[in-house]
Image (cartoon, rainbow, N blue to C red; front, side, top):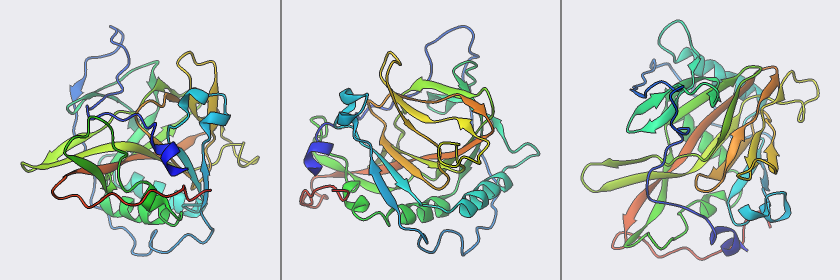
Length: 300
């Protein structure tokens, strides 16, 4: 039942970061800002429904090598974008970059706008593109999965959530396009929450990661050059795992809190993905509507 899936969500109000353990081999974090070109977005891009029905596959951790994650949310949506749309999105991202070199080494967050290189911990390149129109269109595609809107409408209540609730606002406009070449990876970590305020009384925070795969690995297309590069959920010892292999146009949605995972080593070829998050707004009790009726998950 829906309540069984959501009741064990481990969420936290405090902002987190994904910095590796402190060590002298990592350079000191620096204050970083990102800017992009204001490029035109084609009116036809991602504005029509997916031509292929979206398939929903929840990860059943209870019946997996990671039963300790039972109750944690991770869902795969297939066919959100076509392979051609993935290529167009990647091209738009590259066009958005100011300067000659589109791809720059990926950094890790130290909080409060500070970031740093972390050799041996995070090895990949990326493009940062803040573009609300694109992510809004992407989310409308995701919502073709019947029941997804209701399932993610609000964050399940936790004891620390006093005096209100977190209600869906939108996808974060910050898209992080990632490029993994042979030998590159992102070591095990949990994704951190992004929290910010608007004005004096509006609070926003992310609780779920949205990961869009832009090309196939050999597990999904034997003709692909990409070997490795799975998103792998792991136990803390790294002894057991559940792999989500790259598939062009598929979206992996999973909660930030408590899901230890890695970007597995790319052995051959290039892996392209885009990561963003789901933003929720804090609505005080006096402004909040009554809780919607609890329903069974749409995939049952």
